[in-house]
Length: 88
Image (cartoon, rainbow, N blue to C red; front, side, top):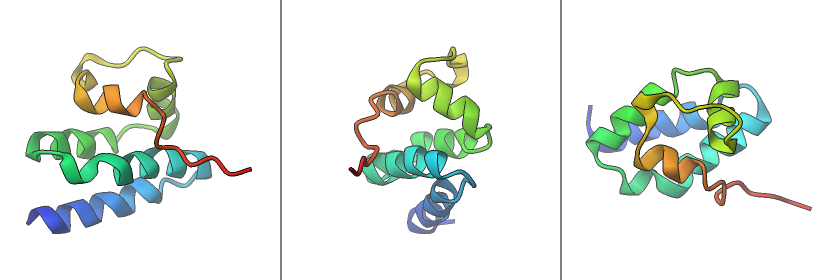
């Protein structure tokens, strides 16, 4: 599967989590960062998407310990939370 197709598939999965808050967090993160990811980071994000939304959100907000397998650039960026759109 080529990079473009892989990213399109991941974008859909990131924005269709089933809970609006997770869609905003995970989908917003994907939109803000995915174009700069290398193949290893894309693979890690694919693996991350297999996790439960509540776990991903807790890791991003710092309310739960991040598993060692996710330590690195993606989780560091996910924890910034500056990609989540907030409307008034």
